[in-house]
Image 1 (cartoon, rainbow, N blue to C red):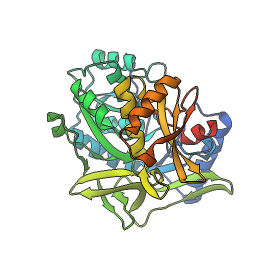
Image 2 (cartoon, rainbow, N blue to C red; image 1 turned 180 degrees about the vertical axis):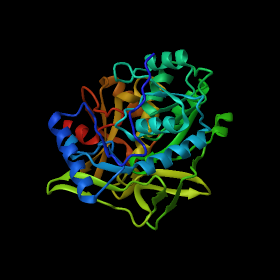
Image 3 (cartoon, helix red, strand yellow; image 1 turned 90 degrees about the vertical axis):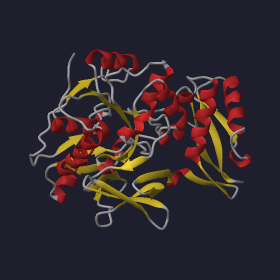
Amino acid sequence: MAETQLSLELYSDDNLILLNPRWPESDYQKLQSLAEIAQKERGLKAHVWIATSGSTAESASATKLVALSKKALMASAKSVNKHLQATNQDVWTQVLPHFHVGGFGIEVRALLSGARVVNALKDGRWDADYFYQILLNEKCTLSALVPTQVFDLVERGYKSPDSLRAIVVGGGALELALFEKARALGWPLLPSYGMTETASQIATASLESLNSDQYPDIALLSHANARTNEQGFLEVTAESLFTCYAQNTSEGPKHWDPKKGTWFTTEDRGEVQGHALKISGRSKDYIKIGGEGTNVARLRALLEQAALELNPQWPMQVTLLDMPSERLGAEIHMVSTLSEDANRKIAESYSAKVLPFEKIRRTHVVNSIPRSDLGKILWQQLKNLL
């Protein structure tokens, strides 16, 4: 079994630019040039450039890049290793791309702890069956997954191997229904909260939470802190906080630092209760329909729950969009790859869970729902399809 260990000099002044190799060559070169210009003009040394998910970018070349110092990356890795009690006896499975902060973070953690990293992608792509065989064959102890990957394992009915002691789940909200199904199969899930700007997770469920099947609190890690501002947005500070952004704009290449001192204001609404983070959703998910406020992310979770109750394969085939409405300001549309009969059943089940103004007003049938390498829906591409 081939192992993967990223060639990374953690203590050198060299900069590293990590981009998706599947991007079109022209977009790749534009982003490469963007990072080179930004790091030269800002005099950056010992930094790694990593792209944000790009789910709202018009094109790959407009993706926002984040500059993370190697010091920040190591601070994150040390804190996560401490939280997971990771040692050189651990074996990480790697199924997250190196050019995303989640995958890159695994490599740094392993370098610092002396753990092994085993590549569990099949021909460079996620394959749930292949991943499960790697877990068994290599007796892996740690992993990091996104909710889509957890869904695939649960949908196949796979039970967690005895060797696996923790899976950090990030890259999106882990819904309660999926968490409960996964825990019933023994998967040691630790929901987390983080972002590229903080070099991965800053809050994660504890190992002790695995002694219970209840959805756990997501507690701040030792290297980070958080607070809520007057507008209800979460602000974070951490040893792992990023240095600056860079982005290709209509006015040309741009780089800037949006932080206020040592604090960064996120797009997430939430609160801090003791050491636990309670995330209620992103600012862009809050809309008004006919003067009534609602959270589109919550509605999407209810749609996925309705689909899951009808067919385990359906949740990944549907989603919701908030669309402009001359009369209401905004309205809810469903996007689906399923049949008319399946869409009707899902819509009926969903409608029973929501208020009248939150009901689906139109359904769009598409061939596929565009997703990123981590399974996140590419919202701008989806809207362009419609």
